[in-house]
Length: 105
Image 1 (tube, rainbow, N blue to C red):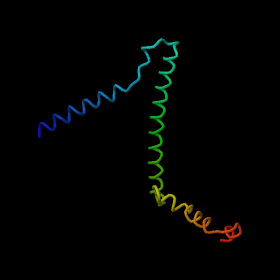
Image 2 (tube, one colour):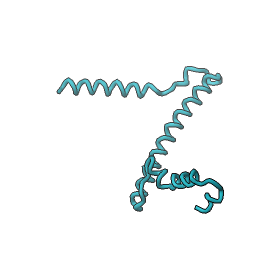
Image 3 (cartoon, rainbow, N blue to C red):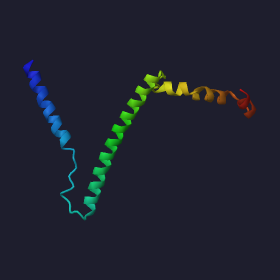
Image 4 (cartoon, rainbow, N blue to C red):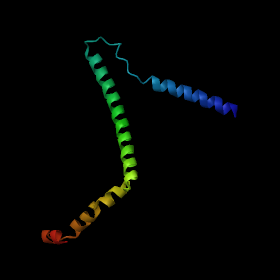
């Protein structure tokens, strides 16, 4: 039991160090060089993507919470397509032979 605890602590320490080493350092380049600008652009893009993903997750979570509070059905995956009525409209379009059939039905 103690051995498993020690192994899990060692693995968690190693993984934390790997996560911290992902930071991109641009100080090794001269400030007016193209590599420095490229490095800063990559760093900015990485941080922006990370922040955007966090915001998307929070927004989706809050939207689902709001839907649950108001009593609306929370749609996920195939349920979205079925509940929007697109499937029925597509079937109606495929079954119609002429434009007048499509408009009638």
